[in-house]
Amino acid sequence: MSMPAIEVVLYTGAIGLSVIGLAGLLLHNNVFRMLLALVMLEAGVNLLLILAGFRLAGVAPIILPEQMHNLSAITMNDPVPQALVLTAIVIGVGVQALGLALIMRIKAQYGTLNMLKIREQLEFDLAAQAEVTTPVSAHSPGSLAQGRVRQRVSEAITQKDEQ
Image (cartoon, rainbow, N blue to C red; front, side, top):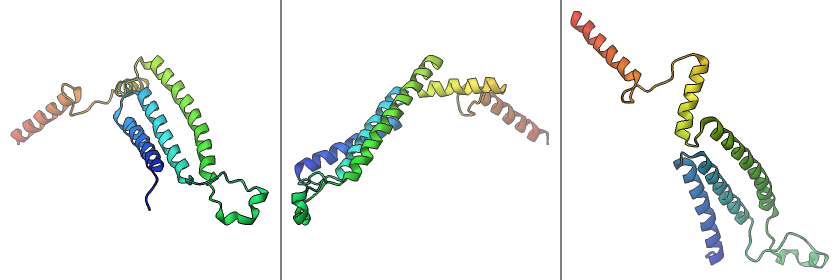
């Protein structure tokens, strides 16, 4: 049994939206683009949920008095996925509004929407508040940690030579 062409198009679109949204979340460093990718992922998942309850020849799940005698011949669409998606849309709009408000605060505070720069500035701010040195990688070129590693290596070599 093959699926009708319209269902193939709808499933392809839903899966495509979900994949594009997930890829956008994982690959972008811009916070606003990440929010837009989240919106696309949400739209794809909502479409998949609607398609889960869809029947091609289905009707609305309302039983009229004249249909009471022949209920087995009626194909109805499942209303539960529709109710779940309606709830998900309302929650999604709230999440988007909160995300946009946070993005505006981040832009005002840090002057950028680049996630890497925001994280770097946030680490420096937290280190300054805690009055500790900022975290640096031992593997980054030209960092203070690399100089300390070189110093420790040279001290270890000197101690070995003395023995």
